Image (cartoon, rainbow, N blue to C red; front, top):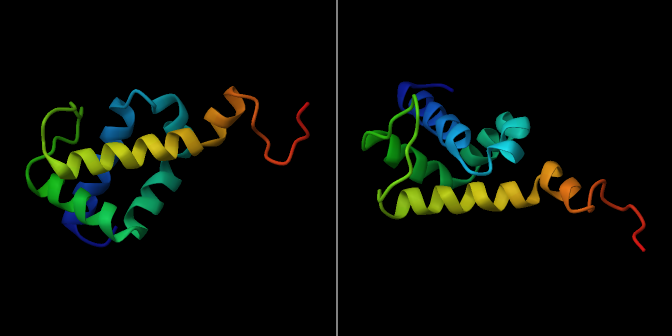
Length: 100
């Protein structure tokens, strides 16, 4: 991370992952989740806005913080259900394996 707002947003996203109901799927891929979040303009802007508004970084508590939090929660949920851990739990990992 190159500057203080990005470092704060990085810490906030990691706190959100650690506090998420999907943490079992997200923690093993946490660095990749953070990398992808910062590559996505909409997710990055929401992260920076939420962290600038005072999002706590030690232990994130989900609440009514508006559309930025809702977008980030949707992002984390999507990534969790596309993660190798979740896919393995429903018999869909590794990809390309024959089913039947």
